[in-house]
Length: 550
Image (cartoon, rainbow, N blue to C red):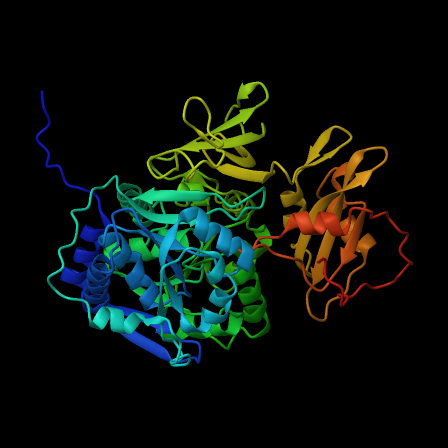
């Protein structure tokens, strides 16, 4: 028997048209570098995305050609999110926090032909453009400066786009987007997304058991649009017609809180470091901001400390933890609490501190030395995933990490409990093996930030003549707070076996981070590779030093 369903391609062109038809008057808000707010709507974005697609076709864009963006979060970037794929091209978001050499390498590896760049980022572009084969540069005007540059105007490109340029028929398996991994374990690798993958991922984001993003939400993507497509939020929000708010380059805590308040944001997404800073301000000035009741904060990128969950609960804000990777588009699991979980607050927090349950159509398994591990919440192993929006290979000839039966090896060490909750224990390269036993740096870090004096904590392995490796904690204290190494180690001794407690604590003013906001543990390990414990003077109260772990 043959099925009787229509063959309907899952493409971003359909998503864009749907945003125009029912949701044309829904606002898209962008904060510019000078603090001014630009208000447009989906009708405006639709018209400009169509114009961009026509202009790129007229400029000679061929199906599958890559068009790079070097842009902050704003409505012109949203226009590129749809205009480039609708022209048959591949949207390639460049991470503006990378070094010029890395940007040149990535642009060349992707074979970018054109680039759209914000005028405020022209100095960065100038540091690597000459090392690439990029043919044309189109500049958006966020500030009105650089008007005399030789590059082409993005506005003029759209204004002069003819209406009669035919757009290509899109197929759901066509490539439409491209992001590169952060390159923490080697050269960055390109992940190419299909229309089908992005559309299906958008459905996952909008599911109640996904991120629950709906058309009645006002969504703030603090996560950059160059970081795993802002977790797919701009695509999903456009699909359901949600109001979108873009913060531009001002990402300090006060600016984000002001924007949340002024636009009545109901759903925001960002990495833990963003929310740690926000919580610190809310704790110090609890009456300053009036935020939307029920505001949900989606947190991903690294494990969320239980202290952060409890802290935002005090302010009536709900943290939703999610896990994913560039290779998973990125949504993989979400940490909602299932009804059968006991209502005891400690048990609820223990569940919410895990990375959650796989969203539908994402399969997960834990593989240890002896094979696939049981879902017992105790047996750790490498997390492997598969699904319709999980990459099957890297761009070009980049070496991959896929099993013979088609699962992606994430490099994360995790457990899965009988209720299906996945918990990241560590990255394989960050686990600490002391005397033949494994120590999770993530668990120790999350315990440390529960101490009232600790703002941030990074735990790494340092060499040891007897035990091979021992943990060392690198800590940033809260402003005005004091603590000693002995005090923090005693705090941890109440929570862990003695051999899990770090041999020492180094107090610093800042911890180096990767371009995506995670701790750059390789740099911390290098800084302290010759570290040896020193006896701390009794009663000496440590304060944040001017030294950083860099």
